[in-house]
Length: 257
Image (cartoon, rainbow, N blue to C red; front, side):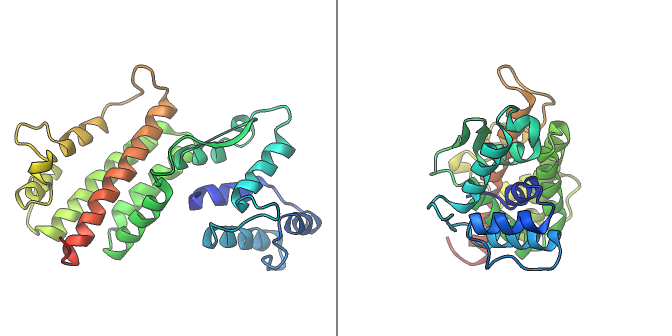
């Protein structure tokens, strides 16, 4: 499954510029009934909407439709140059989704048991549901920065997202007047939202949440990791961890233990 950003970048990378190209593409991929609008941009947007709303859609050859379109890009555009040179934003977005794209095609980097895109979508839904708009804004800026390859900016926005997320969770679970993010996290620990029996928060500062927070702060890459690899690692970890706590928040507010 691909993220919304990946779908948008995929269709944009097709660079369909005249109606004949759009019509040929639609016929080739069984999208002739999907195309709508009088202008090229409207037709491109219609394809994007269809792919986003129908992640299980298949191409005429039985391949998942979005994957078939990405394979088409590699086949028609990458005879000489690597995808990372021709459309780096798509490659970066796929990397964030857990896929590697090169001249050999598309392949998964992560096991299917780690459904990052599904968890990201569910996380965004929860942020919307509880009105955590500032946190969502930081997350979206982190994704945009990662997509364009601005690793430092992505890392910075991820830290801001996590900080704002836990601040808002504290306001929701244990309303009070807190002078710092650390106090918000302490309040969540005292209220039992962070569970000490799971080592999520320990008084000596060695709990999981405390270590997670510290890991987001060092600047630059680490030994053996490129800046891209390190930034992607941070993004994946942030999705998994904040999704986990967002689901816990939802369960508590719904009275589910």
